[in-house]
Length: 71
Image (tube, rainbow, N blue to C red; front, side):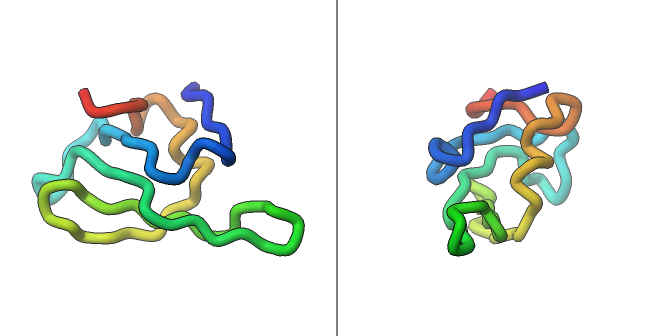
């Protein structure tokens, strides 16, 4: 399990374990917070293709799917 801090999430770098569409490396580009400073939306961008995806930020905790940093 990856340790993910919501405060340090913006601009963090991630590697997807199972590559899809030749997209492996990602950067968290946008976070949307509610009034109580809880994350309600997280967007990641594929480094090579520049495609953007909305994901549940808690999915990044799953070390079987994501690795911290670019590996």
